[in-house]
Length: 450
Image (cartoon, rainbow, N blue to C red; front, side, top):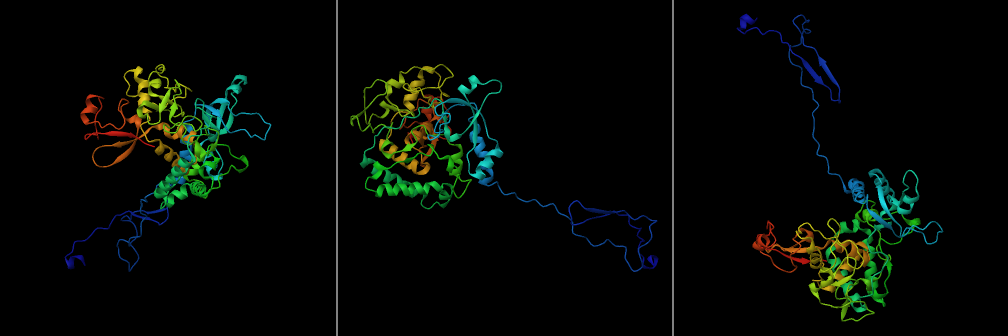
């Protein structure tokens, strides 16, 4: 037949046919036919069988982990920074119990809960325990050191000023005006932000309390509530919010205890602010905590307000004793460590002068108190906690002189000898401070931010 058609005879095919079933890890391999194999049955053609569907490797784009999935690791990472820190116990004792009193005792953080323990605490709405070895226990322990468990909100830094409430500094009229302005600021920023209400369910309650306070006859002068880091009821310690992995719930697990008396009073929110002297003293000036000389209310850079709420004249701070190399700068009055960076300092003797420059009162005191009221609405912290935790970071507004507006930054990112409210050109940065202008080629101005 091939000779008649003129076609060249085609030799028998040798092939390996592999068929993969539509099931994972299942394969059927058929051996190749050889010349000795019997021919296919009559009526069939020696053709390749029809293709069967093959398993295909598909790449699925994994969704990024949700905030709830990352929450245990976030809590653990924040608590891990406490390991090795010297702490003081606050608001842990039950006043109705006759058990051993632990408030005020000092110790060292030895360990924090694991990520799994943090996940369990978030799921159950309880607090994460931190292992602390108290000094007295370490002195009397034999063998393994004895540790006790405390939540983070019952611990503060051992050298922070504590237990002293803020002085009464804000008049009822100023408190009413500034609280109303702070509430308006917060409504403008968060009125249409539904996500903020979900992440911070306690915020709505504080906004309601602020409105009721303004509508009441006593006004802000008669308002009193508990600070978020203050005493808490162990019988009702579980988190009752709608979302157990929200921002407010995680803050409750990681934030430190209150450094004041655990109470919020609006007429104390001007403590340590230049321009708001104590109500029981002369209303025309402050008294320097170092030399007791009068400090004018609008002293500006001639006054220094430190995070411990002590107010000095700039001379007392600039001439204070310089700590040895490697030790933190401290308040001349209470010796609380100051969050002051010495990264750019070439002469250690200039350190306290730079501290006076950094914490100079180049601000409007009313704006500071207004910002504290606004921060209370957001986080529920008293004036002592805000001064110690929030304001100690020395945030600044940065104007790059390029028309883009002010941006937020940390004071430690700039040379310590740079003054507030002074415009520096690129040449000033290069010649006076020996720093690369970088993105400030058109100049830069820094201002205090609250």
